[in-house]
Length: 384
Image (cartoon, rainbow, N blue to C red; front, side, top):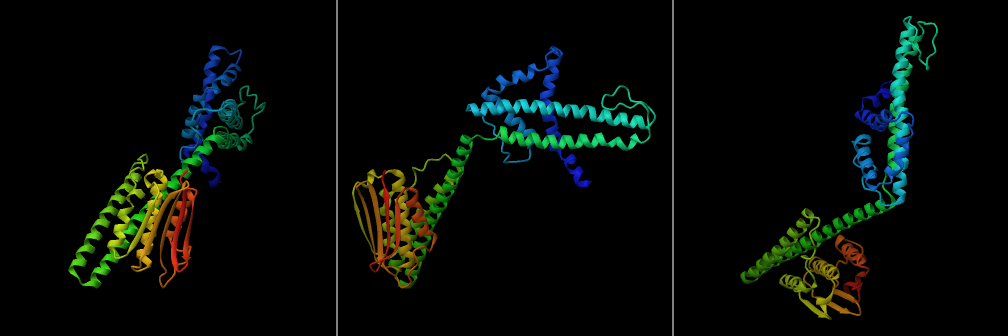
């Protein structure tokens, strides 16, 4: 019994009831104008539902009154953009009016029927009730008096659930809207992933340089070397703070352009940072690097940063060879260093995975792993 009464204790049940009453109230106004033609309001709903803005109004009203507590209601609040949306809106308006009429009939006649049954049980004959042709009163009618109220409660709850389900079906997002929402969600996930990679590459590189420099300075015991190490740590830390501020700015401002991100034109900063950490870096750049498209150049910078970070982190000061070439409509980037004693697996670590993800997003490919006694990171990115 308590479970049956739970829907009657929810405020949504009564906002749905009010939602069902609204169209019938409008019909009642028309009956004051012309009672001989009560079908006219239903006819007027056809051209009304074809107006694009009507779908938006119905969607807002349905969200507010049918599912006020649901963040993802499945009900659209955008105007009609296709004839399919318009026809669904017309069908929704007609069905809503029919369900509203049924609800009003229940709301009026069920309480009247309950009162008449109670009156008949007390010895009074109900006055001309077409639903209750009682000629002789009887006390037994008292047992039937609650039934109309139970029918009313079940009808209100059931019709509320029905109109909500129909609203999701007829006012729900169209295929084009679902596709647009899916694309927006995909863009948000890609942006999250990109920001995570940005933080990993930038902050990870800075921390690796700082750790390597601090360890080398402590082991060297040379004041001049210590000064150079502290200078490298300071410079790398400042660059990391700039990257961190920029990434946090992207989080705060969704529409902020990405033009401030570093490109391969600033690769010298990475090479100097690695050299200052005690790693000998032999670099070769060929081709029109300045003409590389922004997205490719920016991702190429991050790939190079992560590759050099891996050299500093795992290869313990061994020399590295960097080759960046622009030719034949693609960017080739390769970083090689002699294999350390412990060889990481080709799929281990989020850094290497991030390199492959960056290359795949641009339609390119990346290979990482042992090659001819070296550890190799080789990436090919199309410029188109």
